[in-house]
Length: 249
Image (cartoon, rainbow, N blue to C red; front, side, top):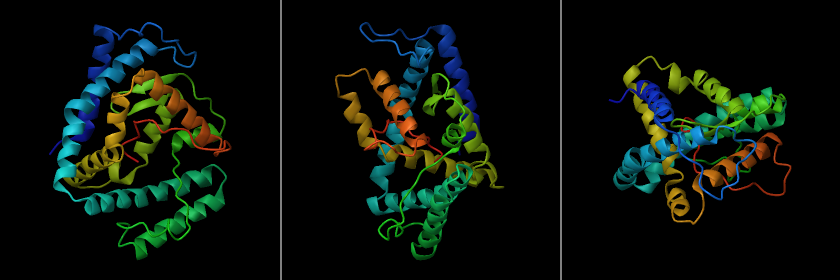
């Protein structure tokens, strides 16, 4: 069984090594972003993540999709989604949105009781809207500036503020931190990573085939979407989601 916490530490060390060995160059004709002052380093970590995804995550997810039928994969997705609604309710309370928090808790109650422990999502068809909040968003609502854009090893696009948010997410995540049985905890973490990657399995292939600078596209999409989320969706429509999502959500 893979010890995911240990692997994450090794991935960070590998990414730092990539930085000292040589940073990726910025392609000609690509305009630098004032929100991305560490672009060369970020591109190095981005390339590391792309290699990790290509040679490890995608083959594992392909096997996952081959072995498990869609109805089973959907049940796994719904289970983790139902679990995340508990934390979303807490974040909405911290952001001063008690009505959203009540909605989230109702989702958990309905899906747990009537959705076979969360394996089925019966709350959404019933009119209980799905939200997704995290510590990074809460910090943003509290007025903490985002800081420069940064690409994290394994986790992907982030900002300085969202990096601290990710650390807080992990620290307060029961399934990641506090299950006494280490083997069970690592197995659940591995399944969450595969489940998260499976949700955008085909989206990555679409981006790979497009004639764009993938790094710049994902950076701009991430920053736009985070601004949208923190501003509570005041724009007319939600912008395109980036390929990378936090695998622990």
